[in-house]
Length: 71
Image 1 (cartoon, rainbow, N blue to C red):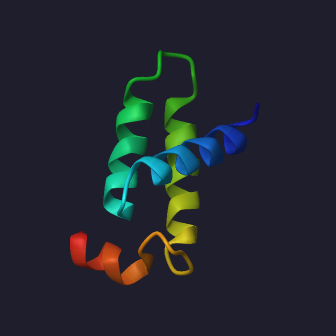
Image 2: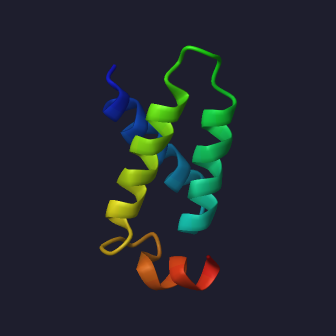
């Protein structure tokens, strides 16, 4: 599985387990922090956050306005 595939899976799981982008971002950060050394945690984190941000403006998960209010 590539880094992008792992990141996409992580974003999907984070969004299913949360109600806001801020919460999803926290889940991604926590999950990556718990990855063992040598698992490309930084690359997966960067890709997952990039995917999450790219979805913010066109998403039923809350959209950009919700994210702006929370950050």
